[in-house]
Amino acid sequence: MFEEASEVFDNMFKSSFPLTFIVFIPAVLILVSPLPAEAAHEFTVYRMQQYDLQGQPYGTRNAILNTEARTVEAEVLSRRCVIMRLVDFSYERYQKALRQSAGAVVIILPKNMSTMPQDIVQQFMELEPEMLATETIVPVYFALEDEELLSIYTQTLTSSSSQGSSSAAEVLIHTATANGFQMVTSGAQSKAVSDWAITSLEGRLAGTGGEDLPTIVLVAHYDSFGVAPWLSYGADSNGSGVSMLLELARLFSRLYTYKRTHAGYNLLFFVSGGGKFNYQGTKRWLEDNLDHTDSSLLQDNVAFVLCLDTLGNGDSLHLHVSKPPKEGTAQYALLKELETVASSQYPEVKFSMVHKKINLADDTLAWEHERFGIRRLPAFTLSHLNSHREVQRSSIMDVRPHVDLRKLSRNTKLIAESLARVIYNLTEKGAPGDLQIFTEQMMQEEQLSSVVDWLTAQPRAAQLVDKDSSVVSTLEYHLGRYLKDVRRHYVKADKRDPEFVFYDQLKQTMNAYRVKPAIFDLLLAFCIAAYLGVIYLAIQHFVVLYSVVRRITTPKTKQH
Image (cartoon, rainbow, N blue to C red; front, side):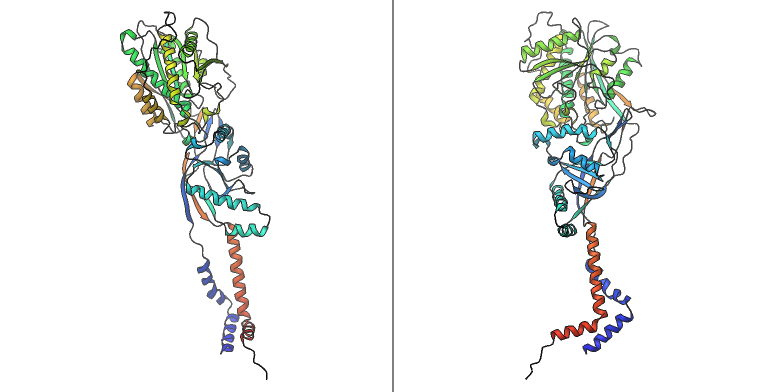
C-alpha cells in the first residue's frame, strides 16, 4: 500500500511542479504572514527653531520624519532617527549624527527641568546657541520623557549597542530577532508664515505742573527664546522684567492718583514684542513715534529710558550703558540714586555700571537700550547679569524655579525707590538714603508672584504670540488697570525685504511603530526558500526517502 502511495505522489509532483506551490505556499504564507504594524507609542514633539533674521537662516530647515530609530551608539546613523537623552547629550554626539547624514534627531528631555543636575543644565544651555548658530537640513525635535518613550529608547539602545559585538553571527541573530521602531511625524513640511504681526503695548501716567514735562520711559520685552519655541518659557528672561514693569506701573499709579504725590514727570510704559529677534517691536515703535508723527512723548523731553531685563535672581545689579551718563543729567541722577538705595537699604546687593559701546557690525544688538541709543535717546538696561552673552537669556532651561521671588521683590522695591527719589528730587531736598517711599504694605508680593506664575505657565516665543493671543490680551488688561491711553502697536515684516521670517510646524505628533528590521525579512525569505527546497527535494525523491525511512524503522529479524 505504501509503495502505491509513493508512486502516486511521485507521479503527481513530477508531472505538475506548480502544484507544489499550490499545496505548500498557502500554508506557509498563513503561518508566516506578518502582523499589521503596531503603533507602539504616540507622543508630542517640539521642533527646533526655524527662522530667518536679516536674511540669515537659523535652525532646522526640515520637518518631515519617517525613518527607523537608532541611538548614537550605533555605528551607522545614515538616514536613521537618532534618539538621545539629555543626560547623554553632547555637542560631539550631535555633530556625529549630522556628519553621518542622520534622517532626524530626537532629544528626550525630563518633564521637570529643575530636577536635572546643574552641571547638565549648564552644559545644555551653553550648547543651545551652538545648535542654532547655523542652519541644518536634518529635522531636530525635542520630546518630554514618559515611561513608553523611555522604553522605546532602552530597546533601541540595546539594538544599537549590539552592533559593536565581535561576532558577526551574534550581530545577525540579534538584529533579526530585535524589535525596531519606525518614527513618523504627522505634519507636513514647514513653510514661511506670511503677515505675522508682532504686538507691543504702551501706556502712560501723565505728570502735572506744565506742558513740557520730562518723560521717563520704562521698557521690558515679554517674549521668550530657546532652542525650541514651544519649550521656551523665559522665566527670568524676561518674565521677571515684565512682572517688575507691571508692579512699577501699579505702585506709581497709586502715587499719581493723589495730588500731593503727583510728580512733574510723565511715565511711559512699553511692553515690547520681538525682543529676542533684535528688538523688532521696539524698533518699529521708535520709528512710529520719531519719524511718522508730530506729537509724541519720545520727541519732547526724554529724561531717560530704563529697560528691565533678567532681574529675578542673584545679588548683583548691573546698569548696562552705551555711553556713561554725564554729571548733572537725569541719567546720572538715577545712577547715583541706585547706588544710594543699594548701599543704604540693601547692602547685600552689589551694584555696578557696565559700559559697552554699540557694535553695529554685530547681527543682533546686545541689550534693548541700544535700540534707543541708536536714535540718540539716553537709555540703559538693568539686569542681574554682567554680560549680554550669558546663556540663560536664551534657553529652554529658563523655567519658573530660576526666579527667586524674594530677590525679584527686593529688586523691584530697590528700583522703585530709586525712581521715586529721581522723580521727587529727594536727594537735593536732603532726604536720607534709607528713607522708604514704598512701605511693605504697598508692596504686594502675592500679586508679583501670580504674574510670574502666569507668565511662566506658557511658552511666549515670538512665533507663538499673535495679536489674538491670551498673553497679549492679559498684558493689555493689566496695563489698563493702572495706566491711561493703553494702545497696541504692530510690526509686520516687509514682504520684499523681510527683516524676520517665521516658519510653522513647530509642534507635531510623532508615532513610533514597532517593526522588524529589513534583515528579518531577508532571513525569513531565506528560511521559506530553504523550507520549500527541502519539501521539493523530498517529493522529487519520495521513493528513495520512503525506502530510507522504512529501512530505518523496520525492525531487524533475528537469525537462528
